[in-house]
Length: 444
Ligand SMILES: [Zn+2]
Ligand SMILES: [Zn+2]
Ligand SMILES: [Zn+2]
Image 1 (tube, protein in one colour):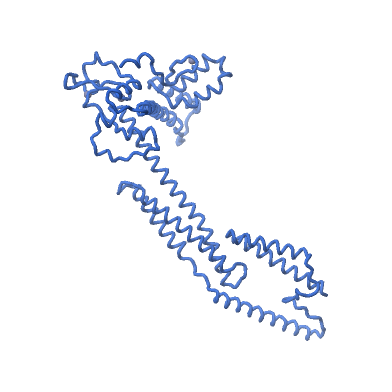
Image 2 (tube, helix red, strand yellow):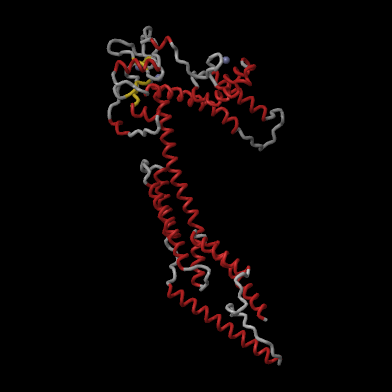
């Protein structure tokens, strides 16, 4: 039973050179800097390692710790402030830094104490024997039990120990307590605490937890473990929740320009322009549909996260779902209907006729002018130059450029990059115009 007392277990801020237990990170640092100064260079990487990770294994909570950091915080502050300076009325000073300095040391105290317990819990849960006697031995190897031979009263409730009120030990700190003052930590919960991959189903919570399926703890240790568990749980819920929400907003951000682009493309079709083809606009519509599906699925997932009804979290989840459903209905599903091929043909025919009329009219004006001026100039038909004339040469760099741009347009279409398609189409139009002018000038 007392075997573990011979080889005492070292925990805490241990100096790697002289094995002294230094109680806190800051004390270990100053110890290192004063006593082992000559080794500093050789040990630098090692030292960095210790100071960087020491926080995980902080033990003995000592009020000196707190006092020290308090003093440091005060000193830090008095350096920042000049108290001899007379204060003007209405001046506000921030005490946030001071508050944080005091608060973080307090939080750290809890965190480090809890971490120490978790390390022990991990050791306890590792290969925990099922046989009660073997298990007792294993437990005492990890955490030595306090010698209770001289203890007559339960330190917690002050009742006398006797045949019916027997002495028990907290499995995490080894302290003595009576059965009434013991709290049991469910072994499944304990397992999920040390290995987060094993999520704990709370199905066993209806069952009475006792020595067999739980760990006997003192109230102090139990509360620290329970507190950490709450933090872990809320953090896990939050990450899943927040991730889903962020994914949803990303999809919404993508949907916005997609809808704008779709409207633009649609309008262009209705105007009879040839920048986009019907299948382009259809593809864009399909993409928006996909985004809507994604947003819908994520918002449903958010609404289905387990939460206590009536809480603010519950309200929030429902509101997100409602907002998403509304957004999909109003912004993504109310898209303008696409024209049919027949409608497009009609629009294009009308456009062509309009252009024809315009040309006729301009020709008429020109002829009238010529008639009025009495001069006879050769009339050039700028609208329809004959590109199949003999001067067409395939080596024309303009033609080559136009073909390259056509290739780009095809590629951009495939990738649904319609902003690019529009730009390239405009370029192509410019080149065509230039080419026609070139042909005309070479003809004369
Ligand atoms: Zn040392
Ligand atoms: Zn008691
Ligand atoms: Zn305890």
